[in-house]
Image (cartoon, rainbow, N blue to C red; front, side, top):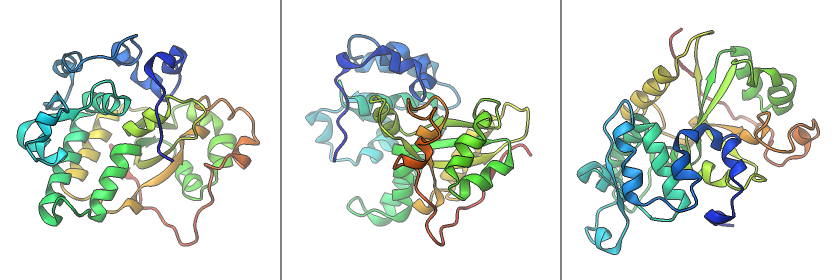
Length: 275
């Protein structure tokens, strides 16, 4: 069933103070204001975006679409991100561009490369991987390598319950990247599962920028996201405080988002940064 986001005026503002949407409180005026922001208001944030130049957001109108360009090609050729007004999905996509411009630019560059190879009517395995990460992706910074073994085994009780403290003491941290994930989070009862890239980082070091730069470079040069099977599932609803029911141990046995490892399924090693 296609997800339908709640109407803007019906959302309890408390939702924006809870993860994962609380990770975006720097954009509170765009997210939680009483009125939908217009395109000019979104573009006003472009000047404050760090690390990479940004395309401009433009209203997706029939006149714009008459250029016949693919959505990704328009970004690459004209620096224009077609954006539907009064639309949660596109607003949240804009926030990802504002916060992670180098990652979004790398995804766009790869999409355009793939379109040139297979055409605009076909989709390669790489395009599927790129889209999965773009829509439902997250980045996990791992400071405790033992947690990766638990995660890879789909030992969800171990990852989220036995190692509950790891989610607050810095041994593991999640950055939500997918704008569809954020859209689903507007309904707090949703069970969120991300398509995740794992990054191994050293203890007691702030390496978020380095991790993002490494991922962006690997995507851009074709070393990463060539197949959807590269992405690890992570049930975000299991993270302490990310779902109202996960204070109960039974949640990790009963919630349908906690699926066992398929026979033969193997994941690639994490990206290593600063070790």
